[in-house]
Length: 494
Ligand SMILES: [Zn+2]
Image: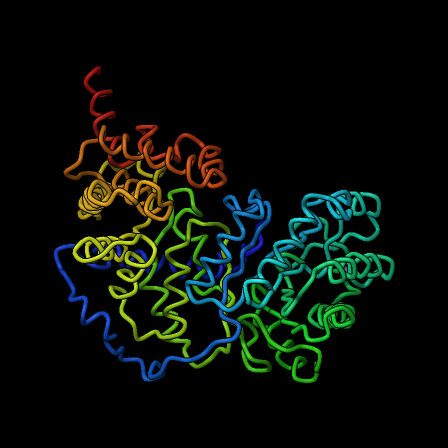
């Protein structure tokens, strides 16, 4: 079970529907060269809500550093500090993280000098020292695996909730005491906490009769945990969330939350009772392959999301599971503040600010970013050799990125460049034809993976662990670009 699985279930479906609609053509044609000046001035959208930019608090990124991420859980403090600083420079005023998913750890990890717990405290301190607010995600009802194994009578009951690892029933008094004991140690140990978000589920929940109706049990248990948190951090804001729960549960939360004086915000849902902190619509690190093919830039979708929701949220805490959504995070921090900005403008700003490009190179790479994001399918076209015929600009994007790299040597050492480059190469393998040779594309894919090893070894480890069929062009039968040649060759023997 992934944290955020519900988010994916709810949102990616929306995105993939949108992607299908987009499949008829690239978001931005490389042959169209939008004027940079028009972009900079911010073409006004038709959305009546999107009239002014606004100050959001919090405005930040939630780094889900847990077992399912694409490298975050392997970072040392120095790597975290770089990310914290970059995120601040992208415009964030808060950073969220996931200090302890108890079901994924052992009590040893929670000892004073344990590497994991030491790092979480240092990371918390580093965020605060950078002048940013600190938020974190905490499951409501998970304990350590050995505790969970020792007490089968405490186990949460499966039902409509996504439980994750080692969930216990919050209606069992002894289990609840253990939940409070673990969380008190967590609150006491972290040097600064400004927000705690705890979702009703994903991960968390219990479907037993004692807990029904569960929204009531969830709020009661969260109220106890918030009293404990405030003992150590009097100013902490408690954030409830019905994300991933049913509409009926959200309706019940909506009825109950106005009376809950201890609850300050909601994370995305339910809308109405408390100021909303926008969570994840769209979730930017799970779309388009979950980092398996580099980032999936979805700037146009992010812009649309913030256009339609503008005016309905007070802050942003965008969920992410690795560096692969860097370009989306940047875009989101811009569109959240001002959805009137154009995709071309924001994509070009990323090329300028983070790839250090200027002039024509920045313009071209901006267009590449705006045009990337085609769904990559690497295992579904045995029945159709024509699959993947819808991305005619794919090779042109690779060619531009390679040309820009040879002209601007700094890009060799810029992981953000290689992320976009890897995506572009994967999209080329995901289309049936193009101007570049398979050999060149394979060579470029290898160059990108070598660069990750050198520049972002934790992400490189994630890529290295993938099945060979997820590596672009490695197994011919799995990629539209290679299957036709391979299959025709086979048929020449019969
Ligand atoms: Zn229960």
